[in-house]
Length: 253
Ligand code: FBP
Image (tube, rainbow, N blue to C red; front, side, top):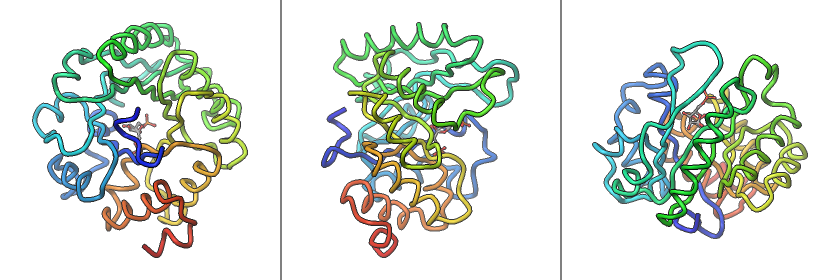
């Protein structure tokens, strides 16, 4: 993960929502991958997350790349599964320093994703790349994916599956996230952004909480590029994550 770390922390910019959610997340400005690429550079993000289609056409090498090698649309219904759609070799050719892969523990298809991630992780390590697992418990049996137990389980799944870093959701309080970070062991923990919060202060408070719980950083999309001032949001996030500032200081940068 060293390619992404600054003072042992990282703010990663996620932009695979066009596949995961569709253009409903976008406006006249952030629909454009070139806008996002510029934002990643100007906002001094430590990494950018693209699917292969965007990386092939828009990635310009100025920010370390995490290539997402699986994904799904939200048009399909039933038990969630996201299969590999890009080889690790192609990710390396595109300049990626890490691959990203989503596992949905609890899904009837979890075994497929665990098996696939295991193979991808081994290939990534052979090519000197990190393997980052997005671990989102989901499916018919998961009634609430934000309980402390479920979030801690997600963190542990990442560690057990061999992830160098695991991306999990914030369960709403510092203590619950602390336990999840402990359960992740030597796998670094990144907080997932989630839908845009009502106020930016609310989001920054979650980020501060995740860091206080021991997170390495965050991988965030909508709360940055849906902001009315994405660069200002990027500055506030860097103040919190990289410079370890307080909430009060971060809102004033
Ligand atoms: P956001 O910060 O926009 O939530 O992005 C994080 C992320 O993990 C993306 O990489 C991915 O597209 C999205 O969330 C998936 O969200 P979900 O599966 O919860 O709809």
